[in-house]
Every structure is written in structure tokens, then in C-alpha cells.
Amino acid sequence: MWYLNMNAVMAIAGMVVVLAFTRKWPGNKRILLLAFNLIFLLVFSKKLFAFYLGYTSLNYLAFLLLCYTTRFRKGWFILLIALNVAGVSMLRLFGMHVFTNPLFDTVMVLGLIYNVLKVIDALYFAYFFGKDAKAPVLDYFNYIWFVPTFTSGPILKFRDFMADTKQPYRVDAALAEQSVKRIILGMFKKIVLVTWMTDIFNHVSQQELHTHESLFLMVWFYALIFFDFSGYSDIAVGFGRLFGYTIPENFKKPFLSPTLTQYWRNWHATLGDWFRDHIFIFFSRQAPTKWTAAGLSVLIMVLIGLWHGFSWLYLFWGIYHGIVIALENLLGKTTVNKKKVSRSYFYARCALTQLIVTAAIIVYGGSAETVEHIYRGLLNWP
Image (cartoon, rainbow, N blue to C red; front, side, top):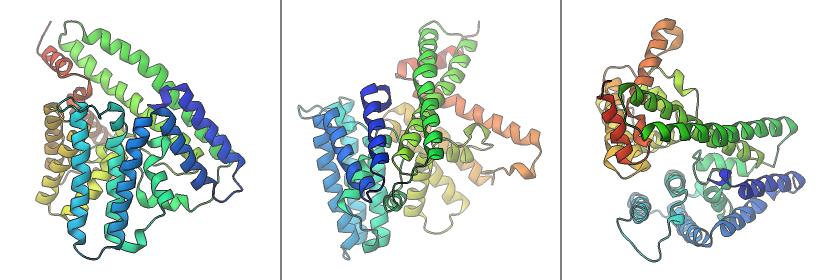
């Protein structure tokens, strides 16, 4: 969201310059970053600033509680996660106008579905590592408020961010050049390609649709959201690295994924990794059986669907993806080693995976009416 606002982009770029000029000060990455994060959110929205100040402060206290408490640790752990999930879910319902309250403002939910995942990751770290997980309040706030990834990820891991925090600011000419090129590429995707592709999608989708037009829209929309989200990720990765932090990749050649299991390790990789790591850790400490893995796969994909939005469409999308991944687990087909199969087989499996994804990708296409209109068009032969 920040990256479509030139004032925000200039502010972030200005912070990069400040960090570069203060590189010899050991505290520049921590102290100056916190000041920037606080001022940026305050200028953007006072309500957003006030909400996140309270939200982050409460969760830092919860984090410290898990670091130091020895009694009822599991109970506290489950309760704190449940409170976060319940709180975010309630705010989303307010955003959907299921509930109303004069104190609620939609700006409060900006980035919240990503930031709650970071909060929970920190709680996991505190639960499993106790006092060794403790972190200064300054670094915890920087972790939650990190502007380059605040609204749409990639999702940062608590351990990795804290490890980066301890390193001095090191951005040389080669890294700066690589990061700037990445930002320019992301801007081109977001501002040029996505704008043009969105206009075409809206124009075609508003007409009476036939089979070939609906198929076109499904493929076109798939490409559109790839350029949209990968463009955002490019910008976030570029600016994050210019801030001195290693931002994980969100897209790892997803179109060359021969199974849906592998696809979700390559498409929005940080989201798939987060759900896989935390759900499997919680429900299966040991290597799961095929049936356990299949059941957890359905659960994870349903949760990912509901994470995107509280609607029947996202629920069915999650069940659909979960069933396919569950079948891959039960049949022992979760991975395909490119070196051990023929090229034709490998690319045929990649094509099948893309077909499976394309069949449901339009769920992200906006209103339920638009999605229904496109699916109905599939049955409308010329």
C-alpha cells in the first residue's frame, strides 16, 4: 500500500539515505529505525499509530510473560494466541460491517493479518526458548512495525529479524545496486503492468461471458495477481535490504512447481512456510503419518483461505486446495525430483499443477458476484 503513495516512497527512500550516512553509528539500525517507524505511522494515521502502539505494547508484555513464566506455560501460550486470533477476527468483522462501533476505523486493520502472524511467531519463540528468547522492547517494536513489510509482507521470522538487528549496517554498492533494480522492477509491475491488466480484466468481466472469455479471465487474473503481489514483494525486499535487513523471498519460480505441495512452498512462500511450521509444530512434534499429514494439509489450507477473508468462497478455496494436497500426501506424490524423471513428465506435472491453481484462482477476483459471473460463463458455450 505504501508503494503507491509517492510521499511514502520518498520518506522510505530518505530513511535509506539517513542510514547510509550514519552507518558508523552502531545504533543506527535500531534507534533510527524505531524513530522512523513511529513517525511514519503517526504521520500516515494517528488512529493507526494509537492502535498499533497499544497492540504492540500488550503483545510485548505477553511475549515477556512467556519468556519468564514457569507455571501454566502451555495454558498461557494457547490463551495468548487465542486472544490475538479472536481480536484480529473481531476487527475484521467490524471491517466487514458485521458489527459497528464509532471507535472502529478501517485503517486499524491495515497490515494486521500479516502482523498478527509475526506476533504469534514471537510467542512461539518465547514459549520454546524461554529466557533465551527475550528481546529489548526497541527491537520488538521494530519487528512488528517494520515499514517495508508492514502492509503485505513478506512475513518476517522473529529469530531472523533479531539476528539481523545484532549485525551492523552493511549495505555496499553492489547490494544497493541490486536492491534499487529490484525496486524499479517491482514499481514497473505494480504501476504499469497491473494497472493495464486490471483495466482489461474489468472491461471483459463486465460483459456477457462465454466459455472462452471466462477461461481467458481466469488465466489473465492469475497473471495479474502474480505481477501485483510479486511486484509488492520486489519493492519490500529491495527497501528492506537497503534498511540493512535480509527479507525472505516470497516467490521462488512457482510456475515450475510439479505438485501443489511444492507450489505452496514457492508461491507466497513465507505465508505457506508460516502455516506449515506453526501448525505442524503445534499438532505434530514427531514425523506425521500420511493420514496425519493429509488432515493437517486440509486444516492448513482452510486456515490460509480464512486468513485471506471470512467468506464461503475462501472456505471452499481452502478445502479444494487442502484436498488436493491431502491426496498428494496419501499417494506419496508431494514432490517430484526433476533429476529423476523425464523432462516431459516433469513439465506435464507442472502444467497440471497450474491447471489446478487456475481453476480456483478467480476466487481472489473481487465480489462474489464477479466470481459467480465468471464461473457461469464457463458453461455458456457460444
